[in-house]
Length: 218
Image (tube, rainbow, N blue to C red; front, top):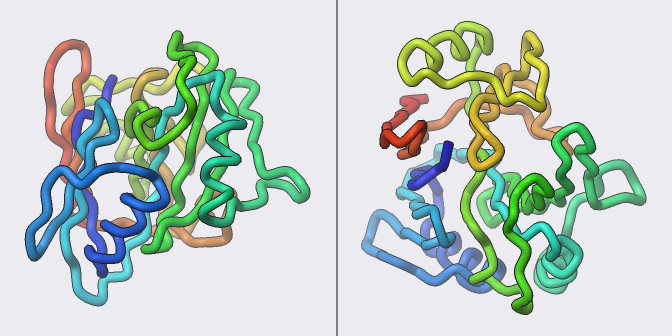
């Protein structure tokens, strides 16, 4: 699975544009009075203006698997990186054969840079915003994770990620190139104490050669 487009909400599109330009180094693809879009290599990322919604999402960007430490230093020079388990700021997902780190954007979204060693995506170029490969994960929140999992299987044929066992309140669907992270409402967004809530989300993704659209109203 690959995430081709991700559309989210932001209460301050102007500050969002500044953050993604200046901190992540993503160039503005499109801007009008109510939205802004960026290109994260394989994924188009769009924020639509909202008022007093205070939306908070969790999503992850893939980076070359030999560039995580370089990406860490590059981001840390611009904004604070979260502790995972102090004093560590890098999470080791050994069962996923991946490592990652986390930081907030201007909206309070939990962003993740993840390097997956199962992918052949090493780079010899110095890390910058153009090194970001894609949006590879988006968190989806519901009151019943098992029911949501069944619904996504019935509608799209999505199955659990082979490296993550299904849990009652946490299920991961997709493949190493793109994942939907299903979590129960009011669960802590790792590695923070921010509670997960559902907000409008639209995802255009490719699964088994077919482009599909998933839209979550709230």
